Image 1 (cartoon, helix red, strand yellow):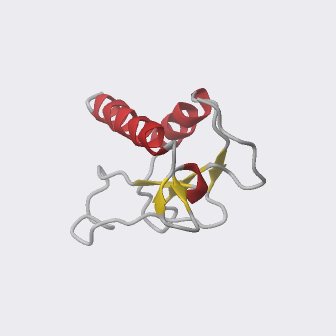
Image 2 (cartoon, rainbow, N blue to C red):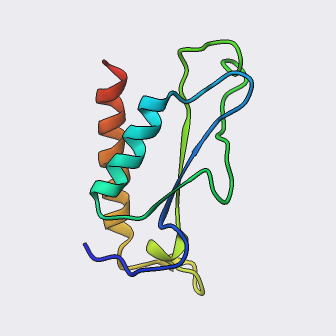
Length: 108
């Protein structure tokens, strides 16, 4: 799959770095490595940082891990028309495959 070069990262991985850590270094490295292996540029915690963590576990269950993946919109849609772009299916497949990687990681 060919991705056009751009000044902003194509994929951004956000982590929660508050009083109670909600994303361990192993999970951060896993996410970053996965998308880089796909030939994508990856930004970490920029321009934003943080993830969404359910209140039921935030600062209560240290086993809970959270990582947010953002995809630059022009990779999967026509931003003018809001229609799916030609690479929508490829982006969808990358995210589906990453879910499998996460599931395998969580079992270790």
